[in-house]
Image (cartoon, rainbow, N blue to C red; front, side, top):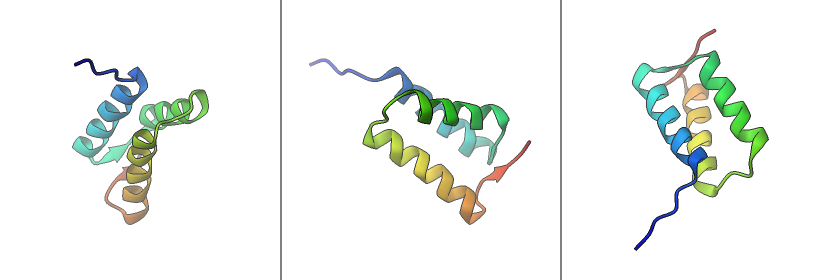
Length: 66
């Protein structure tokens, strides 16, 4: 059985892990999110990852640092 994984999905999963590990979203993280949103059509799973991070920022669970 073969599994096909989109490279951007791996990047978003890694980005999500880094953000939750540090508890903050920095400029580089925001740039990666922006490029993912603008460059490609995202899968439903990718959209869920991004929405969870944005929700965490709104709730104050993640900080946005410059």
